[in-house]
Picture 1 (cartoon, rainbow, N blue to C red):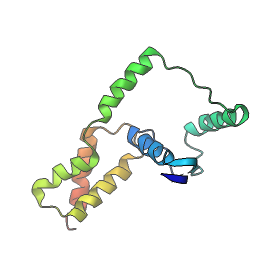
Picture 2: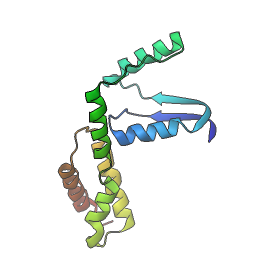
Picture 3: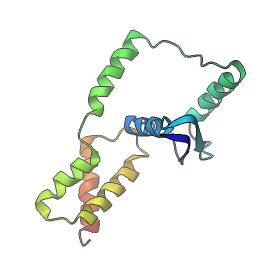
Length: 141
């Protein structure tokens, strides 16, 4: 635990693992937390975030709506999907029989994570294809 936390996020990404990591970092403080965002005017979530922040500052409470039954069910389904194999595990599995170095595995993992951070709809097959491409590009490491 820390007295305060300052978290920098270059880009808000609509992925459960990003949201969970951000929440974990922001919740580490027992006094106050600060989130510093990049000037990302293209992100459609920014106006909603600013509107909520203004409401909170003016009224000292958050105005949240209860999710519908359908939203609750889809969130439960989403949580199950989020328990799928991590990118790191996928890379390690792909590289297991290729005698890959830890450096190569780390490089591929980093590259694939950076590429799909921009893509909310990356599926397993797409990620496997990226892993293969990055392996071929970097296998000399």
